Every structure is written in C-alpha cells, then in structure tokens.
Length: 352
Image (cartoon, rainbow, N blue to C red; front, side):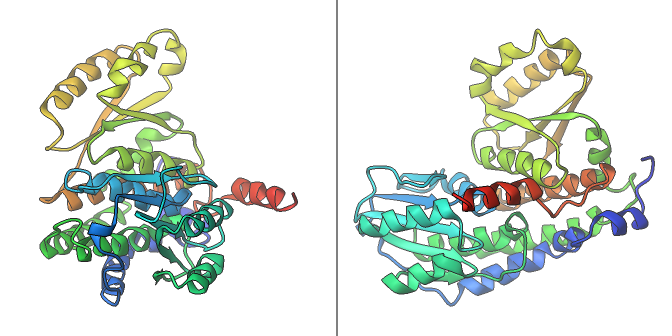
C-alpha cells in the first residue's frame, strides 16, 4: 500500500480505534477527575509491600505505575500476572486488583487469595465479579467507564491509581506534570491523526515497520514498561510479532545473538526508545549497540521521548507507539480492535 487514505481506514477500522486514540487526552482528564472522589484507602505506615494483580491491558497500567514510581517509592512494588499471589502477601500487603472487565479468571483467583490473606485490597474495574467481590468484602473500589478494549483504556487503568498513590503520600506528583502531559497528548493527537506522511512521524514509522519484525530496545529505568507497551500494541493492534529487551541487561546476553541468523536479521527493524534522562552509561551502550546491530540489520531507528516531566515523556512514547500500531494495522489491512484468538482461547478455557 503506497498511500494510506480515509477510505482504507473506514474499511478496516470497524470499531473506530482511531477515535479512541484521538480522544486519549480526554480520557486522561476524565480519569484524573474521577479519582477526585476517592480518599486515600490505607495508611502507608500499615504497609510493607504493594502488589498489583492483573493481566493484559489491565496489568500494563500497573507496570507503568511501578516503573514511574520506582525512583521515589519507598515500598517494594511488584506486578503479578498469575492465578496466585506471592507467598509473602499478608495483612500488611497492599494488593491492587485490576481487571477492566471485572471477570478475568486469573485476577479473580488472586483477588480471592488476597482477601483470605487479609491483605489491604483496592479494586479497579468496570463491573463484573471484581466489583461484586469488592462490595461483598467491603473493599475500596474504583469504578471506571466500560465499552473500550482494555488496551485502549490505559488512561483509566493508570491515572486513578497514580492519584491514589499521590493521596496516600506514597509519591510527590506536581499537578503541573499532569496538565503538561494532557497538553502534550492534545497536541500530538492533531499531529498523529494527519494522513500526511511528511508531517506525521507515527505514520512514517508504521511504513518503516511494514513487513518487518520489530525489535524494541530501551533503558530499564522508567521505560521497561513503555517497551512492553509497544510490543503489546504491535501484537494486538497490528497483529504482528514484536520482540524486545532492556539495557543494560541485554548487553550481557541477547547482544551475542546478533550473529548467526543473518538472513532473518535483514527483515528486522530495530527501534531504540530513547530519553534524555537515560543513565549516561546506558546512552553510551545504545550508541555502541547501533553500530553492532547495524552490521546485520539495515533498519535501525531511534525514537526520542518528548516533554519536560518524566510523566509526559513516558506518555509521549506510549502515545507514539499506540498510533504507530494503529497505522501498521491499516497497512496490514486488519481491524486493530478484535483479538479473535484471545477470545477463542477464553472460550476453550470456559469449557473446562
């Protein structure tokens, strides 16, 4: 496909994912406003650790929250993607149960376990069994709007919890950082919704990734979860495989793998997600890595974050990745919203 046009988008974007992306800044504003009605649910002095349990689009908000708060948070914070919780969970654990549908079977099982362990539980969902269990046990509950694919509800799964952390005084978050993030998203929505390839970096990047296998690299600090988001969005929206790793860890193992499969490497595109506050040694490692992988892969690209605050810079990269995956879906002539194979898997599991 040489030139993406409105008729192509109308043909393949049956559930209007494009509008969900355009409206993302509004979703963030609504999520922040929604959190105003909730008080701090627990006292920090009563806590030893924090666990967010969830899967898929409901878990990525937790990953981003963990990553964003890691430089300031004084308590251990882990994201749990399983039916069971770590054995250390007890009455001094703060367990956040995150399920957009409210009916994720793994999350429900972990929720029941958290309740039995007498953990301090906070639930966030649209409805379903998660809401019913929260009501049954008198647990604090944040009800978020439904009707979206979980991956398109990131504003609702991230910002209310971020505001809870702020109210609990687990972190110090200036209101200006949120305002600046919303403003940046508004500006980028106008840019990324354009079909002028010369003006739209998300569209250009999608063309770069067409018929390629994306390999996404980033620093560990703050951007490990952003890296995961990119790969997840490319898989769910564009229906392609995508792989990745974080630095400096990949320099101690995966880097050696850039050697034998030379024919396959020619079909890859390497994306470095960059930030001005990446550790100086990590920035040097990325510079050296570009030369190393560039010997095997003809397509090595850098994508830099934008914005003044860590929050706005994180979401600048997230938003660019979301739009890129959407445009790649259009170029691949697939509807970005349905995830039929996941629905099939859930259906088969339900039979047992």
